[in-house]
Image: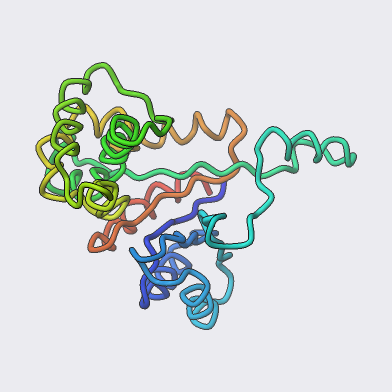
Length: 240
């Protein structure tokens, strides 16, 4: 099974990619989040100069700002098989944020909040988008965290500017937990939405993904938490 990393693109992202290559990671994915982080193609070019083997890609590419990529899961599988290609040759990658916990470390420890909290906060963002703008909520609302999510939505209804509340709602999206949402990113929400667990538990979960047919596990390394790649490098070795 391949292991990759994903990151919010920055001008010096090549340093993290270079370390990932040294640790044996096979792929590096650069987020296309314009106005929040650097241009992914420029950063990929720099990483290509500084590395030799690791494969580079965008994850994701924003269709409204770029030439729309052809990427539909069911359609891709159908076209793949219709072309006479074996389904087992088709790659399947799962993207995740998470934290490798030490024994006894809580799900909302400072490390877990920094490394996995941004993924849990996405559930808050999508719930607020649904309530404020009527956008579909693809994340759903985990029952155990429903109260915290609804309280965040009440706060988000008062974000400014009033005609663009989404700007504050999505500040820090997949990069950091902003102060306004810290009280609502609970231990339960982190546990439900991210790959946060002890090393042995994570190996079992990733092994289950492999058995289910996934060919690559990609973990996002959030800004300021680059040292987390060492934890995930240990887990990657178990799947060599």
